Image (cartoon, rainbow, N blue to C red; front, top):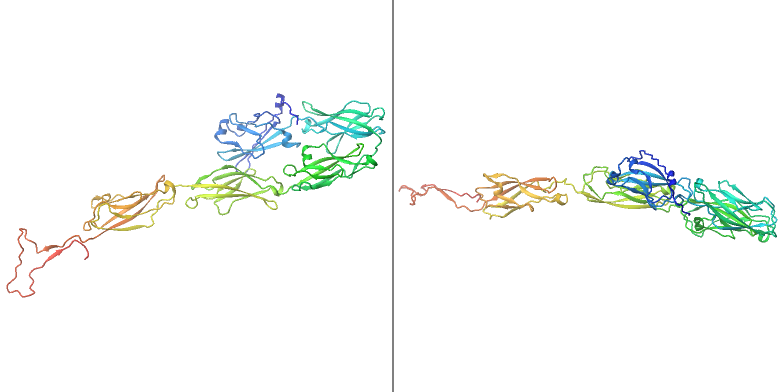
Length: 600
């Protein structure tokens, strides 16, 4: 392809039109630009900041980026100016061949609110290619007895540009025997023909050297030439004739290399070398020569390379038959490629959240992804799904974009991590599918207070216990994680017999073990009523209480005490008097004694 220098005048070709509309549920907008091909890298395409209603400085703050899938990124964002610019050389013919309209679609993502904008850039053709005949010269053999008015097909030039920039006409160098006539076929293609204007004489001039020039239009006209050598031979008055003016065939894209596509056939009623027909492609393009092979002797067209419907679904092949002296006939072979479901869907994750709090509301976006299948029709229709037992749902948004959302509030204590399998399945036969795995951690929130396994506890300690003796142990469990599950223990402040309860017992804040701070006396304290509090370390902290009753067990640590008769205070021996006449069994006195211990 001939490269042309881009001139300042070409800037008049730049047109920008913006179409804003509400698309789907996320209010996606569609923006249309147009730009000529062959611009320098970094050339202005459109003011994307203005068309999005933003200031240039907001683009970086809102995490704008291009997320389009494609072979090569043709455009880039200039965050300083807020413009969409070219990211390299754009060749319209490479992108769209000879399509009347060449459009490049891309998507722009605003990361902060997961919003997609569709952008359509039309590539405007410039006259950057000259017509090309493929071969520098062509030999035409003409019988010397040909009558004036006879026509001979000339080679056709090909210009990949379109419109006024494409092939516009032909010119023939001046000579005394031939003129040029350009025919227009039903397909709109111009076919140059050499017309014999004056009788020939091989003995006078055996070879005529002509130059055929093809030219295009546009501001700067380009041209290409081919040398035509007209060689005069003895009479060959019949040209080959194809059995059909046009051959049509359909073939599946997965047909093996080497398979016969069809056979073209032409006959020539002449005899000998004048009637021997050989076949060839006309206007051979690289893609045609790489995919198809024409046997010059049999007319068999076979598959030379792998066909791909996604690359091209139709081929227009020009063939010609020529006899020994060089008379030619033209025909077309129209090949339709049938799609086969040979492409599995492609899933591209555009935005992903790897962690979410368990208290997040239903409808929270986990991921935004794009699904694409290069096949067509039913083979290209894709359905996305996730397992039914997960608390998530899929929502289709702009174009082929889908969002993965929470369906209900999550509970980390129930499930702390999810491995979500997104399956994209096409509608082909047999269907092809692609699995994408998304891992999601559920972040803990302090939503569970510590819990004791019992509503109340009873503990026992014998009196006269040593100070610091372990009395009892309580344990509370918190199902949260990390600091939200770290439990500390404390005793509620209270008083016993006028003294703080904390002077009697203490509790280890980490283990929940209770210790006696003094030696208990059953005769003074028989039980203690405590309220144990378990608190976690969350923010804010949560707590729960449990009642604990400690019973002091009696020990035989007190001797009996005689209350009556009372001992004299002077240290003398006590005396009880009885009459001399007292008989056996006479009550002398009663002895009253007490013991402060309990039981036996």
